[in-house]
Length: 105
Image 1 (tube, rainbow, N blue to C red):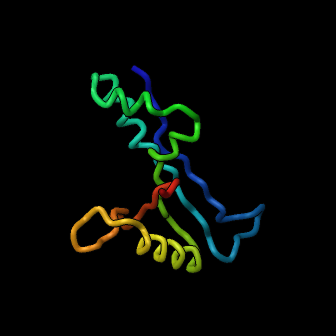
Image 2 (tube, rainbow, N blue to C red):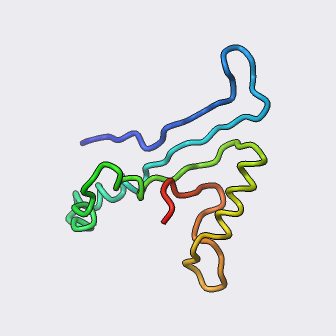
């Protein structure tokens, strides 16, 4: 069985021995990509997997989990979430509260 690492942590909480003023810690979550590969192994979603033609196409299946971000970044994320297309009736964003898509359409 092949095992995949689904998250990559990025932490700018310290520079050398000194802490920075605004911590910036996010994780990249490739869980949807792993789910796609697993489904293709079970003979489901094979066409979708074969549509991944270039290395950059996998970014559609990666989410950014916001662990700790500066206030300015949080405001930008909130504006981007409001501007994102809605998949739900009532206009709510389709992004979960604690994450954003790595590549936005």
